[in-house]
Image (spheres, rainbow, N blue to C red):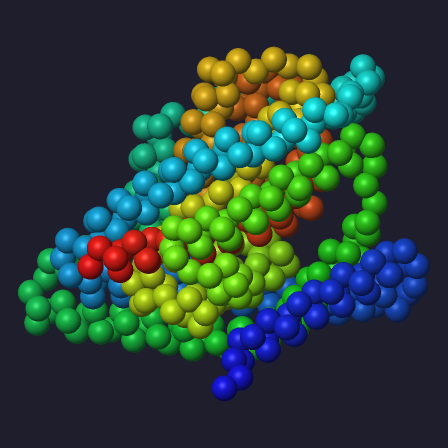
Length: 418
């Protein structure tokens, strides 16, 4: 029997290639037709993103609430503990890998003395950004408790909402069976309803992919220049190698074929490339995991949303490249203690993001004081942030791949333990 998801994936890949090709043609020729088409695709792409934003946050929270409230008492805690251990080990591993790869790529790159001055010329650094300090751990822990759940939902603050849902789900498991079972069934029905909506959105994925990829290519074209060109080549190269490492790693630890894992994660990767949001890729991850990996309900309803919420491997990869690249350009020495302190903060930020596109003032900007503490001129960080659109595409790609990998590994380990 023909797999409809496989056919949809092929159409999505074709739409991605068509959008990039036509957008690049429009950027190079400047013909009015391409500009008019860009206006249309901007509206279509905006509608698709709005629909994804509408469904993904309720889907993640609904799936987790249904899974926790219907689980056996005592099973949620061990699952969460295993997940956090795996996430932490993966962050450490890929920090080492990214630092090593970046060092290799930059070893043959010499920086003229005037380059550093050119990078900082004309960049104005807000005083509060340049002199600020990372939030203390106590403030971060307090921020996990949402004072207003609806306000947190409006901001897309995933971690406080996740905390609320986990606590509420655990509370439901403590109710008498006569009360717990109807609530669990209600949550499950809500989750299934959201899954139906997901199916409707997946059907139109090729249209959304074409619209977004066309708009990106039309606006940016293919130009790379000077020192920024080196960064825009180094970052994607390091990230893509890390993406590829997840395939054998998943095959080894989860005992699945790399082909099956690739087919499962490909639809989500396509969404990731076009939306630059791992959270928006959640519906495609759920469907891909069910179709090609046979992931259990626990995996798709609990482990996968947990991975999407808390596991963003791009944090350590992107900041590894930025740190070593800017240190290389400015000739800044990085003692081991400085590197350890830097990535301790990166790890903290990994567990406090939202999985939404970085559209300025986001992750890159909140890391400015951390770079300054490592001796890196913040002007250089701001310059890299200005061209972060291209690296952010690859960052979301590695996030989605890592999240599917972590879920698959955790799922197999849980099944083996039962």
